[in-house]
Image (tube, rainbow, N blue to C red):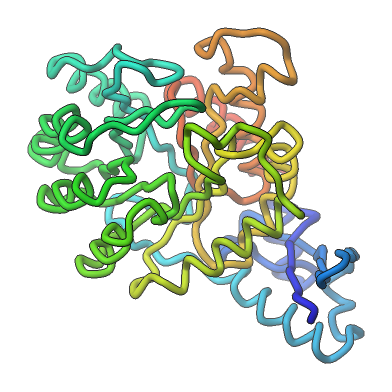
Length: 353
């Protein structure tokens, strides 16, 4: 049995995109006239092999009937404007998710913001620097890290979660957790978003909680657990395997207020990460906003040489600008000020094209 996948490609931006869309020579990506595409990469997968071909959108009518139906169905999702289900965030614009790690052992900034004073100050700094969402985490999920008890995790984040809406009522707050016990507490305090790196596979109760309370969520991909995920990760095809994972998981949610995150560095080697980044636009055909976190990740070191995690801003920014050109809507980052500046300049240049 064959399965078909459709990736928008050959993008145009700014004035040229608007002109091509107006003249019906290209299609808008996610309902935005500022970015357009006129080609599709089609993947045809069966049990034994994967075939690919790139076609111009004007050639869709020449496809065989079965393939044509599948491609047209995918295009509807690709060009559809994304619903703004987070009050403070528009998916028609580029958004930044600032990271607040309240852990002693995160790979990049463990222990820096654990005090109440420092956590509040850091959130202020992130928002002033341009963060649209604050993602709060109390358990490290770096490669090799072990799970902690939910009570310890909640104790680390409870002060900032309980006080967030009082102090930062106009900013979206996300809680980064796999634990149903932590999700339940976070929901009690009106968090906007649940960011579960396990893709809601760690606990069945987590899935039922977001369904019961209609919570918005980040559907994240991870192969294995933080302890095992970097021990020789294997895929038949990383791009299509993760697409299939998302398709299957999406069916489990009653409310489709979902953001997709392919999980760069979570059970992926360098080749896997680069494949996902380079062809990220495949995931637009799922019909949901896309979030990507490349900030300070190990793959930057693997390409550019040995840098401490805090010295990977250049690699972080270059990956983000490429992903932005492919229509990704949200970026999870540590260095909000520098990334925001880079995005603003890059978008201004694209607008003038």
